[in-house]
Image (cartoon, rainbow, N blue to C red; front, side, top):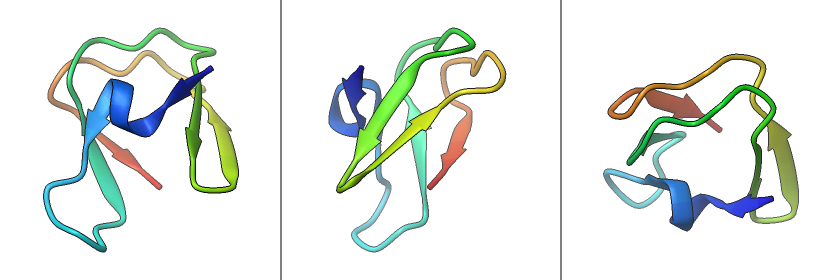
Length: 51
């Protein structure tokens, strides 16, 4: 499991999407606040991850 700050960056405070800073494999678990998300698809570096 990864914290969002480990795998992505929010462009601005309050944004509803982050930008992946590396390629993330399908099944990667991401924690943001009190929620945990599991990626259904591989996410390439630079792609957006909607929260």
